Length: 170
Length: 386
Image (cartoon, rainbow over all chains, first blue to last red; front, side):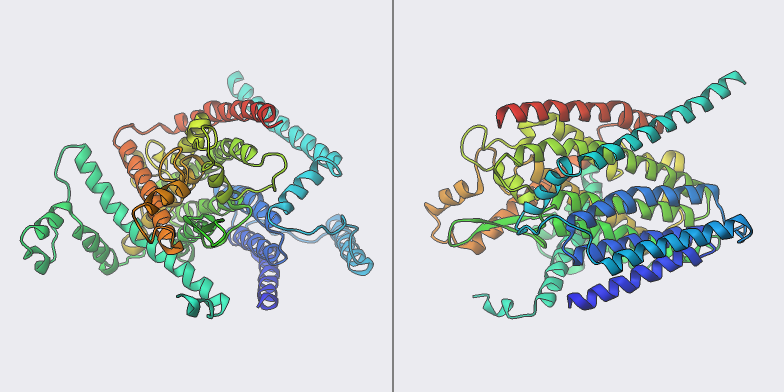
């Protein structure tokens, strides 16, 4: 049963991911993106990574994708600009694709990413373990990401303030 | 007694349990729409809906008249109207998303129930076993995650309707829902800081929160609503905003937006939005009662176990798990319904906030307050639980 569900969610996720790229209508594409995220969350649940699944839903499907959809609807872009593959873009596209392939290939061939030793996961132990790791082993990445978020927050404040001043000057 | 039930395959059993819960929530949500009108009438000192009656009930001498006055048959009349009305589809809408939006409204509203335990019983060893669809370790996170998907119904409905009022409404809805989610999440954190005392297994589940509120002693038996009043208040205000209830119903304020994102909807599709709103209220009230209102404990400082022991002095079957389960579910449902009455009461007490006031309250008042509250409790809990 779990095997069947996993296959179902995997196919669903891949189809939705293809839909994001292929769809000409931006609204359809963002809906596909949301469904894709929900599919990935489903996969995480089937892999017993409940925390990851719900954090994914909370942050990406609940807030980030909502903003995407929101902006798409506000701007009402209906595939007016065609995005052609010309010159530099083609090269950049191929390089990005090659990098992605290399990344996936290295993970697939080399086997597992070195993970923390398996601990018996019972009850709430998983959540506690996760939090503990965040505050000890992975403290630096967490701090760096926090700093990045702070920079983007400051950027938003600066940008919106500038706009206001320009309006006042008029 | 119930061995035959456990011989059914797990998948079918889970589906049956899920259906059972939906079959309870759906009629309650319908009845709430009726109760809303009746409560509104009481508060405004008028009789309210009191006409509809099924003929053969009207023949019962006293009771029939009473039921008619109470307006219970208006639920059926309303439901029938919604089902049999012409389900018109305006010509200018995006048909696919227009039909999809009410369905998307229902899904998160009913899915959040999965993580909410609504009762408990004691097994042979005297251990408390919560009754719920999925005893999730991360219950609170799951509820937040799934309910945050509810914003899509408003966005989709407003956009697919392809007219101005619905679109404005959906813009407001998405901004409001995302803004108040922040304060709501921060308001809940002190509860889980307190519950995850050092030396215990970490959890975000609701059952533990209720267990913490049913310990002996003054501090142990205290409901978190008394222990953390500011958290409870912030959570309550954010809950009103998240469920689009007055005074935060700028999202569908009929005086300036006609009906907002459901302006173009009619018949059963409109009814689905309505039921989704009440389902959100029911689940939200349930979460509030679990976190701050003692869950299935009947009174502050009186836990379920104490109550069952007291009943056991004159009821021979008080310790039977089935009786305890039903008792706890009844207590919990009673609290949830009281909470929903409170929602309705507030609706006819406070005037609606203007949209800019909603944003100002959310970002400039509630968010700093919840951060200060979190800091205070983090320090206090660290000192107490050291």
